[in-house]
Image (cartoon, rainbow, N blue to C red; front, side):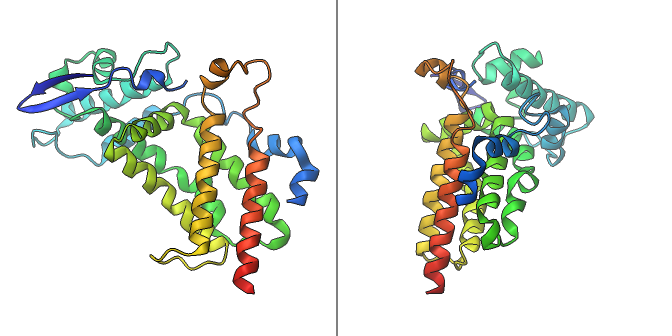
Length: 278
């Protein structure tokens, strides 16, 4: 890890970190065909994970640079240029590690210019994550807000798990990078990872007819375990390097965890609902 001092502040980058990142009964009857129907919709797993518009959105709420200077037109253009370069680097297939120096090169800026806008790699990636996570409501959270009828529970669980998988597939490298940095004990990335899961857990608890309060409960524990398993299976499914590492290229099917995940979700929700009623 290389560190530098800039304006009295240590700036550290892990240049290699991102380079390692990548690239019910009714359910049983429907099988793989149903899984693929829910998992793949036209164009949703292809194309870019982020857009120039997303970079602009990440820039919209910022009024000053890190030196306290108000951003004028030129400053906003430069900041958006940095964000766009980060997006391009995340989407590239050349395997170049994500680092501040790589972003600066792609944006044709010096490191001192970049440090006017982002103090470190975490701060930059959090800015890119902001507009991505703003799409979570439409992508998968909204599916949990309406109570699922008992007779539709299996199908609704599959729809949710498939939607969550599509979100991860669309933003795979960025989300894998966040999780890797969180695993390296980056506190801000740890907080982001936890905070992005909390709304899902709370809504699953509501689906279980549990009370969402600060005290631990069987519903909260079950929802937390369930979401931990679903997220882990999706991270494995969307890891672009794992099939090569494990020698699975010929037989790998990234959708194979969707039906088991949905089935476990259905069982968990039914179980807690039954216990709540009894």
